[in-house]
Image (cartoon, rainbow, N blue to C red; front, top):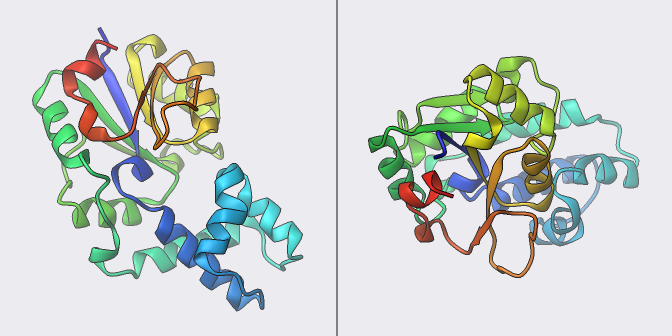
Length: 214
């Protein structure tokens, strides 16, 4: 029986469009014109976790990843609440899990002030037993690093094999499996993300019971 489930912020709220729009805006401030859709197709689709260093190098920008992300978090924090949309089925699933004797954890690389704003916009404040920003544990790791998941399991004193991670990209799935955890991948096409233990097209296909017994 699984004892804990980890959600990433981007699995709960559809943030890809928001990320692309802000990346496009920051890129424009450096003299490069690329629409949000062009940004998504050229960089995000291929390797979302590594697109930023590639983009900075490709356009010879005078900014590093850390400064870019700091600027991006600030831009996102200034957005109106209605910009943050729920991934269909997220609120119900998280509410069901909350009612069970089952630990729910939200993990994000974003700072807490932004996590809190997104959760407030979705009316999910208090919806998780724990909310973790990667900075809480002085992590410089990305969400696609197995070490991050191992550290989380250690903090909550749960064996990795008793944890389930809900992910939406291939590299996160690989890291989760490397850490010894189970993984559910949210994808529009079930025929890829082959490393996941379960593949769904919508969170509406999941229940607290199906996650616990995976």
